[in-house]
Amino acid sequence: MEEEILKIKKEAVQQITAATAAELESLHIKFLGRKSLLAQLTARLRELPPAQKPLIGRLINETKRTIEQMLEEKSGALAKAEGEEFDLTLPALPQACGSLHPLTLVAEEIEEVFKNLGFVVAEGDEIEDEDHNFSALNIPLEHPSRDMFDTFYLEEGLHKKETQGRLLLRSHTSPAQIRVMRNLRPPLAVLVPGRVYRPDAVDATHSFMFHQIEGFAVDRDLRFSDLKGVLINFARKLFTAETQLRFRPSFFPFTEPSAEVDISCIICKGKGCTVCKGNGWLEVLGCGMIHPRVLQACGIDSKKWQGYAFGMGVERIAMLKFGIDDIRLFYNNHKKFLEQFNAF
Image (spheres, rainbow, N blue to C red):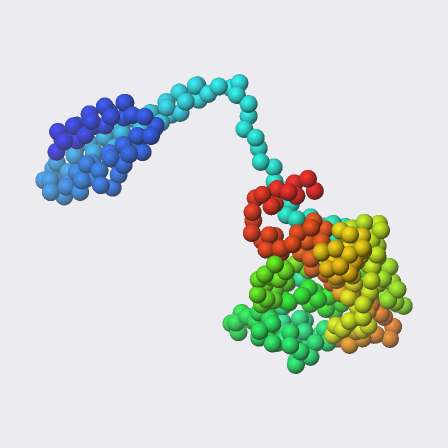
């Protein structure tokens, strides 16, 4: 067996000395792998007389160390030789420069507009309970949004302490509004960005996960005119100074009165085009005065305090701002699409 070990060592020296960088890995497997000749000899140690086992075992280990050292030295020598052949006068390879995602860019721009108006940013949990997501917002049990087909409810085992009702993935950012008003006293001016979830079929304008930004304010003697002033300022800062707003009466359980807000089409300047479907207006958000029942659910006296709230989809604003016609482009992670926003 001693002669076999010496033969393996001699063969290894010859082959490693003449090897290229591409061949070193296969030589490592050949001489040191689990099925190598040395590994086979190690397995045969049990067949030897007890007196010979220490000698042969030591010889096998020394041979392994020698081969390992030779492989390491050969690898280093090849790497050094390759480096010496490198032409340092060659121009450097171009470095790819990343940028923020378009949704992040738009969300941060929206936040900056409202921060300049005195709003502070708060974040809420994406897992909520029925009370904060529905009941405290004056959304009754029979409302269709509470149906299993319109909300992602979670398993019973995922319940945590101090929850009120079943747990779910929040369907809007409004639960954070409830938590802020229950923990802080007016006056308040708060902006809440974040992901929300609804079981919608994915198409060019819908996704089961998207981003919202909600704002609300509570103070004495707040009026709808205050809300209009804030939103006019927001639209003209985010789009153009000539942007016009239109408020259409609507209904939301958590605001009264409520309105849908349109802006004059940023493509045709209100003249009518394919983007605005010829009517010159684009819908951007919903808003209204906070319903007295919502204030009362948060322990705020609705006779002393009034509030307004508004909410918008970040994807919707980004699609209008950048002229994007398919919401799925935001999530596909296509490099060519994302590179367009490097300059923003």
